Length: 220
Image (cartoon, rainbow, N blue to C red; front, side, top):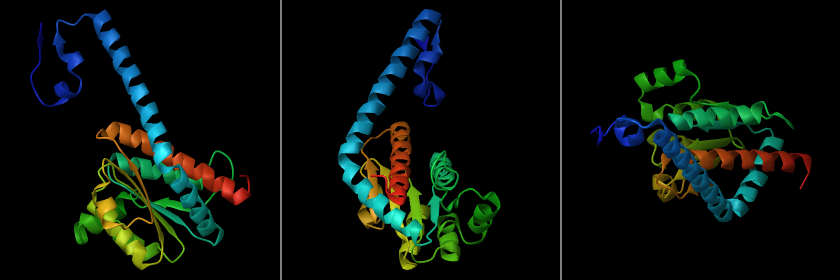
């Protein structure tokens, strides 16, 4: 029995590239791997709750106050974090229940992002939109698993100049997002795994949305 060499897909999923493959052994490994990942994310979410519970409540209170005053939310991110930024904006703008709130993902318009990337550079693709749209009292939420996405950091700097509240979701040690101090509220998921970070960030912004909704309705 030999394992395929390489640093590509084989390195990510070695059990799929063992020849010959025993179907029962493969299914057992898949079950073991899924259970291990489930336990890992549950433990990480509990850690994040302990680290950030009080800060989430403070952030939700300020975010709710911003919405009450006519503020709007702008979400930014790259790659998988762009997908999460879209989901976050969708959750606030078209919630399954509660009050719909003005929210937009600045990574969602391919024409705008590619035009700005081509004309002024990708690092400023979000900052230029923040400069065009944001005003005092708005909210800019940035997601970055590394905390080092230059275009997210530039968006925060521009948001600060325009008097907008900045909320950061990062991973690892927080990267430059933590070091630069550009986020009024920063939530760092302490994990080296991009997968676990993104899963925990989904939980974070869903809890934030829930707390904002409760603040707006006066329910706890």
